[in-house]
Length: 330
Image 1: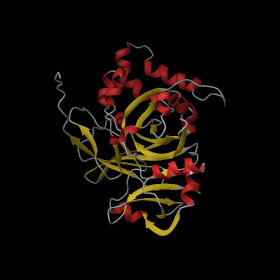
Image 2: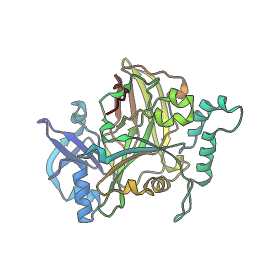
Image 3: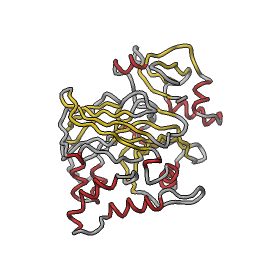
């Protein structure tokens, strides 16, 4: 049975952690107001996150469908100091993920195999190493910190310099670093990694600029192992009407890398093993409305759903003014 953890605001405005094993309801976890607190307690007790939550089970039942309707679902993880939560990810990790990127850059490559395709083939050939060995390293990017997480129902802010703001439906792993510098996976969540694909198409070296910093996380943190074959749906709504929809496939069956290989190449750096830090690591996707010629508009709603997650991730596209880029001497 799938064990889920959620963070919500209560009708009185306080915060709570809710655990659920199915259905549209869950029970409140006593004594903690954030999943981060619960994870720290689990590390201290050397227990699983599920056991730590179950040992604090209260009799109070929470109607999750009502909380969703009232806009009280939060992102499933945050840190009391947002600078200690990293948003990072990998690209070209899924079977078929190179096709759209290759189309973007082929014209500039004079018929040669693009760097994107070469990177993808490295993953196909060496991204699933034998246990105990190291596989090919994936494309990697930094996206932002905890201040850039957007919960379901809230707008994904596209800066006014962006040429595009489009969805990237995928799964993200959520991790905590213990006091000895060891990473522990808390679970998985739905995610919309959100990027500027016009910038990315202009030059593959602009990949970092295309990552518009903000990303949306679905409300559920699912503990345990991710199913090997995850089949979801990504859609785009405009004025309440569906204008695009497509299935997306993820999980290791549909990936050119194992999750363990992606984790190794992220956490091999000492910087990413700082005690107390949190990490949200996006595993990549092969499905984009941009690849099908869709141009998003302010107010469009991205909707992503996939079992084993019961609740969808929905976010409207917003626009925000950019800060002045002027730099003065001190």
